[in-house]
Length: 436
Image 1 (spheres, rainbow, N blue to C red):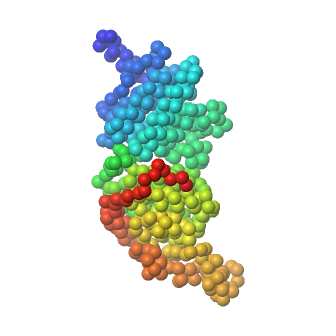
Image 2 (tube, rainbow, N blue to C red):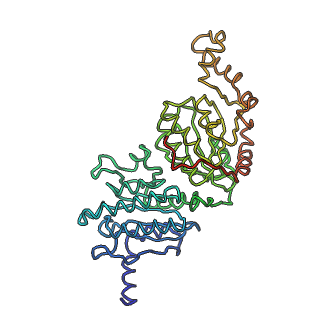
Image 3 (cartoon, one colour):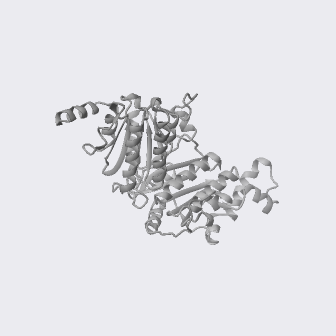
């Protein structure tokens, strides 16, 4: 094949949707393609694969090409994507997949089973070794949806579809976000690509590396919450916002260093919130991202949510800091800030309450005479009793809180603790994985 023919082939490829996507995703001029001229039944393969940099960070990526056989999965496409995963495993770099496909190429029949299985196997092999993102820009149904869902985080654009069912009743971005499947929803394809660029910069290249540092750091003025007052200005990237607001999870930076932020909003932690928290903490632990947990919760709604969260924190060996800002009742304190969670440093705001059981119930048990007031006044009396008998100061005096902090010096205190914990090393018992 002459050079002129190769140039013509590349010119044709460069006109397709996949190239447009990858050119927007990678830093200008950094994209290098792999298996560029691989054919699929006489046509170009239905995906473009390659590597480059995103804000200077090395990344592997593939984009299904809706302009070629509608992006249908084939043996050739699977071969390209599987090889990309092998390269990622060998070199230790993140993998980002852009999905837009009608499904599988049915003319290849049973060979499709092997094709899909190979990709899923490769993705599972590097899970927890390199970060993986899926960006759904069009249709991802059936087994294609299963491969997309194997990533650590899923970004969807409005109008995209993601479902294991071939003819789903509801598969749009909003539905998947409310189910906790789509972690981030963007208004269009371009903003989804840009969000993938942003999110990848919070992650280390692999589980032996450290996350990139951003030197532009400053506290947010007039912050409306503890997380915002601690994190660097405009550094927060919220995860699973539409799934539940009982718990907040976000990646952010403190003095340029990446931190995983978890916060409970004062309500009971239910199964959705437990799922949201535990999955986030497990990811942070896999890539040694420190976790700051802001605790304010009345309890857990069930043993299932309690055990899921408790195990995620207890198993995590990354640096863990807790801040009790409101009420931490019994199991919540134990799971998120206590000995069972293996928390390294526990701070508390001065008005925080740390109680073994519901404070109102304790007031009836331990302060029965004072609770003999009209029903409408009982909450106030119980609150005063809890703040007196189960205050943060009492908890600190009993060794359950390391320091009482104010909102003004909170950012400095957390930063100092994280700096001290940056060299944390923990040896664990040999095992394949937890069974809880």
